[in-house]
Image 1 (tube, rainbow, N blue to C red):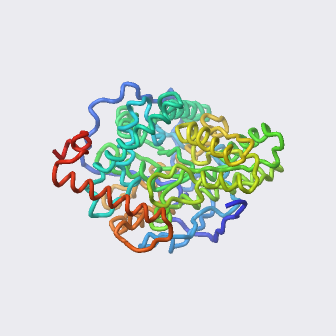
Image 2: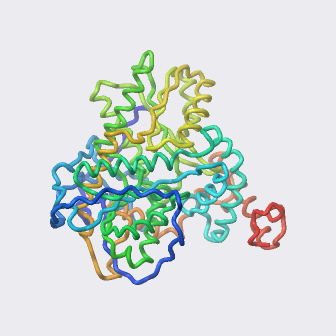
Image 3: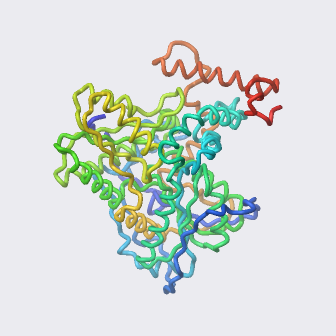
Length: 524
């Protein structure tokens, strides 16, 4: 996809709440929750000293993020299948209205907390295998057919042990572990400072999905600190079932079973790729890196995003692809305003397994560009806001080597946003703009509770996805035989069948090399 504009049919819709990408609820229930007996000793909480601010009332009409949502009812129908895009009207960057909102009308007497959600990463080489197990045990990462869902954890154990040696090599090459936690902690601290500077005192927490500090640990600390108003902010610019969706699904299950949490007012910001501050920060980084090339106007701007299985988009209605394409368009529009009109393309990296993922693939695209005579590439890790294995090793090492072998002569890479001031300030504005919606839809009836997952398009997406979850096919229909469209699909079917047969034999007989290796000790 080189310089291909998005085909977006936009029209005005009436979401069930003023800001369709910000959801709020206050719940009441009496179900106990089992919390971890102790928090991680290294878990960090980013506090802000309490500032006395005059209480004010919350208003559903308070200034907040406003934009036109272009979304078809068919897109989120009961079948949960969509090939259309649900996105902002093209060219409409979401501008911040935080300065228009009086802080004293937002804080009131409540104690505000912000929960940053992220993937997590192994901090040492010994953490790699258990981290991979947590990743692949997530049904939002690997969706098995209904008959084989009881094999989710054994399969995750098998894959994690098989992949651990190669993954350890990657982490060893970047210093022996992922820097993701340290960077996220730094982002949390800078966000706390930014909120304080805007007269909104808040504690900022970090909750990781697959490694410490786990989301459960962060929630336990939130309860200890007595937070009464919580803003949930996934650190994924674009929404996907497998990233933000997985974290929110886990968070929703935690909320559902805890009396304190269901009564705590909260709101969710599911995606923020269209915010002016984010777009500006990305454009600033790209413009700076382009200046390092000899002939900057000829450099191909190569947006590389984390991929997701194609079935998530085509079968489950995941808006990730549409949001990613629009995000790229918004950044390029900002660059064009600065008279930067470089060619650009978008591709997807980090696919796992034999199933079909979003295309074009990053590695294939690099080879193709080399064959077409492109000599200079500037890689932009568009779906990442922190440096980690996929930027430091996959892009900086693997893809750079591939590019040089393919005839590319100059290779550059835009750093992840990290603690870039414009970006952090905009996140603070996003939090402030969401505060009028904290508790604005408070309900006391258990049956009337709003879902933790966001209102508007994302809620409809997950509602459709969940309602058909038991019926959705896996990314590749394992038991459908015959000629296929590609060898990739055929090989995937054979590989999945072999794995399933192996695991079934191991589980039913209690014997085999997996038991001998200690992979399945629970089934002895």
